[in-house]
Image 1 (spheres, chains in turn blue, yellow):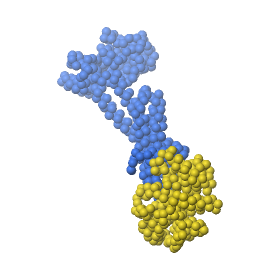
Image 2 (image 1 turned 90 degrees about the vertical axis):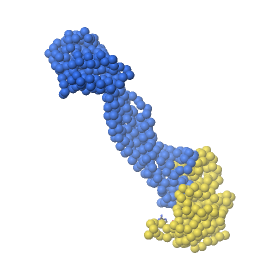
Image 3 (image 1 turned 90 degrees about the horizontal axis):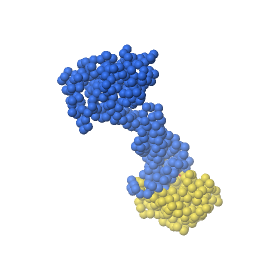
Image 4 (image 1 turned 60 degrees about the vertical axis):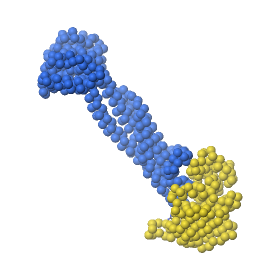
Amino acid sequence: MERLIGSVWIELTGEALASLRTQGRRSLLALLGVMIGSASVVALMSFSHIAKTEVMERFQEVGVNTVQIEADFTASQGLDALRLDTTLRDDPQVDAMGNMAIGQGYVRVGNESLSAAIAAVSPDILDMLHLATVQGRNLTRLDGCNGAVVLGAKLAKDARAGTGDTAYIEGYGFQIVGVFPFTEQQALNPVNPDQTAFIGLECSRRVVRKLGITHALVRVGEGRDPSEWAENARNDLMQQGQTVAVRTSKDMIAAMNSQMNLMSAILVAIGSVSLLVGGVGVMNVMLMSVMERRKEIGLRAAIGATPNEIVFIFIVEAVALSVGGGLIGALVGVGLTALGCVFLPISFVFDPMVLVWGTAIAASVGLVFGIHPAVSASRILPVEALRAD
Amino acid sequence: MIQLTDITHGYGPARSRTQVLDRVSLVMPTSQMWALTGASGSGKSTLLNLVGLLDRPHSGEIKLAGQNVSGLSAHEAAKVRNRLIGFVFQSFHLMPRLSAWENVALPLVHRAVGRTARRHAAMEQLERVGLDDRLYHRPEEMSGGQRQRVAIARALVTQPRLILADEPTGNLDSESGAMIMALLSRINREMGVSILMVTHDEALARSCDGQVVMQDGRIIQTVTG
Ligand SMILES: Nc1ncnc2c1ncn2[C@@H]1O[C@H](COP(=O)(O)OP(=O)(O)OP(=O)(O)O)[C@@H](O)[C@H]1O
Ligand SMILES: [Mg+2]
């Protein structure tokens, strides 16, 4: 094409847009296909964006330098608290740590009997997980195994229990000293706090009936590499005959990210299929338009439109249609996402880039699917097009 | 202006091709108005389309204004049409959605002329054909004669050297037809634009500077005044 920047193209763009306006309803029809495609791509993209943000927030809560140590019961008994403490607590790289022993059991309050997770914890761990009560008080080091329990929000609600009530856990009586508020799912926390009864670590042997500790959370000092520390700790414990699995936020974020990238790739691929269908719609409308406007094409050729100029007019029409549909669709997609977030336990985040992407993708769909009709328009022989009939 | 040498042409695929033009040669001087006559099917429109570079001859040479235009690409042919030739068709070929002035200005779009300048040029030509009071009328709001005058204004707006007209009065009543003819010959006289026109009107053909008579794809007679 000679003089791509020359004003012929500007004048022709004006012509193309004007002719779209006069085609009215059919233009709208083509718009619809691309609109649906773009809406689904954008909705899927922003959903996965939101999910990603959500997961990151969960990790931020626990801190990215936290390590979870889990006893491997296939290889050994539970962890020995003393050994854990001597091996890890004195490590100068460790900022904070706490142990827990978790199991499943029956919690009875009055006539309600519910199956729940039982977590015997050292109070430090509640700190690390930012679990503070809304009702009553939290467990403290002083509680030991004196029969104090703090219930998760859902458990308390289902059992219709509050502070002061007595809860029987596996038959042993505990006094409910506090209730936690509803919390989001936390990364690296092996239990869902909402459905768990928390008791002192010293009671683990009696109630949880597992031998030893099942999990420990360790926060490594700022500036240390949690993965490296975790690997060393695992080896140290191994030498003492304690087989453990270690997890760090960093590794889990990486694993989850790659999983989610795969997910969004699949979702976007599905959305792309609908865009493709929209593209075929644009192509159909444009092909129809080329057939109907044979006379116009012939006339333009006769008065001096070059084949390139005719290609250009029809491509501009196709791209304008797609961009229009793409933009509207992108907005609809964002709207759908916002609506979806109302019904899901996640909060809506607006990412303006999805609008840019949605529109850009739609534009390229218009370009790709506009080429064939445009080129076929430019190949029409003027004599054929102008023949009076 | 027009110089044709041994033009042959036919339609359809190579084997079953029917010869429509058979070694046609012709020289038409500049600034004259010529008529092309002959029975229906004798090849008049075919010849006119070849001269207008709307189609390519199978063989032979076409020169317009001294330039050999037989081997041009579609792109180059379009440029020559825009620069040199104006067309007037029997069925007008106006764009129904555009107003009179926009129809007249259409060739200038492909010359990168801006909208304001286009409007000025279109108004000037509409004035020439006596339609300066119909600037905003659509084709459907005009009579056949008026439509053909819009088409002539469109042919003139690029200031061509040659106007090709295929039965320009074919769809008009005799009164409007006479008016169009008078207009074309005035344009020829006043502006010096060469005109080659297909017509069935013998009297009219005789009043032109030259007359070419065709029969079965050949020129059987050339009369020059
Ligand atoms: N596209 C085409 N395909 C096949 N044959 C064609 C085509 N166009 C014209 N012809 C044939 O070529 C011959 C010449 O046609 P052309 O239109 O040039 O005649 P004409 O002299 O203009 O006739 P008329 O006075 O009726 O307009 C005719 O026999 C016609 O049937
Ligand atoms: Mg004819």
